[in-house]
Amino acid sequence: MNSVRKSEQKLALRYTEVLQDYMNGAGEGALRQAYELGREAVIQELGILDMVAMHDEAAKIVVRQNKSFQENTLKQIKTMNAFLMESLSPFEITHRSYREANGALHRLNETLEEETKRIAHMLHDDATQLLAAVHIALADLMEDLPSDMSARVREVRGHLDQIEFQLRRISHELRPTVLDDLGLIPALEFLAEGISKRTALAIVTEGTTNGRLPASIETTIYRIVQEALMNAAKHARATHTMVEIAREPYLIHCAIRDNGCGFNVQETLAQKGQRGLGLITIRERLNAVGGSLQINSSAQRGTEMLVSIPLEG
Ligand SMILES: Nc1ncnc2c1ncn2[C@@H]1O[C@H](COP(=O)(O)OP(=O)(O)OP(=O)(O)O)[C@@H](O)[C@H]1O
Ligand SMILES: [Mg+2]
Image 1 (spheres, rainbow, N blue to C red):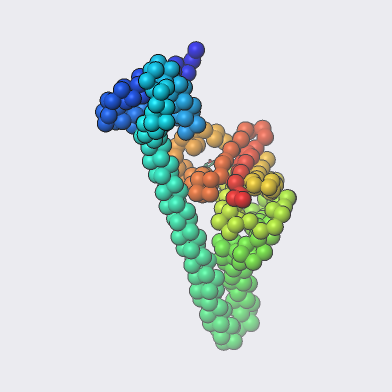
Image 2 (cartoon, rainbow, N blue to C red):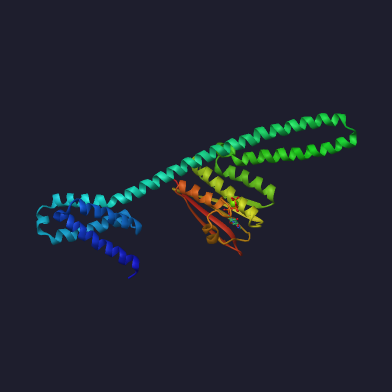
């Protein structure tokens, strides 16, 4: 018998003993022990259903061992329920803190999105306005310059045009209006096109969402793909990347695969952000929407990132 089963059985035995004491009038002291037993169950990672099954077994034993309980069953069941409720409170506390932490993550993500939007607008409006002012100044300057010099200034203006184009592109990718207006797939295609042009990484996007998804989920997937593609371009020395979206009735899947050099996933995740924040942020974003992440990577087969997010009702 493995040690997990053994410790579960020990817990069940103690549960039965303390329930017996409680039924025999041990009062508050036994309830305190019920709470402690509940905490131990949480630590052993038992679920609420396991607890209810354990209580059921214990209750049967206690009733079988005591004839007077059988005569007064309803009252005894009520008393035993009070004991069960106490042993379940640690579960309630754990779930409540989990819900609260999740809510906080959700709010943090929303704040980050707002901040990203602000930076995208600043980049788009302020930076391109400054560039326009430089353009005008250079155009003025060209009028006063001899023709060989003005050819060189024209060259500089050509570079400025490219910078302006890239700034606009990056600001759109930071917070693409296409994501709000048209949804995930067009936004991913827009993103892939931009990254492909800047990095020479070939990116194929495939699949469908079967209509719009909740905004928070669209944004989460967009940000994850953005990070995964940047990683493929920056670290993997990949030449090809594939982004696949697949929709089930209550689940959305996203897979990002590259043909790069791969990396040691466990070692990198264990370093908890010493190398960078991208993968950690992906996990936090997924936690906030109840999603899951699996990364498979090897030098021969590159890296694949598999994301699944539940969709409510
Ligand atoms: N697709 C990939 N191929 C190869 N190595 C990768 C890939 N994705 C991540 N890595 C490795 O994992 C490390 C951590 O990635 P992560 O995205 O968390 O940080 P980063 O990209 O280094 O920095 P940041 O994302 O904060 O700019 C990278 O430094 C890289 O070594
Ligand atoms: Mg990264």
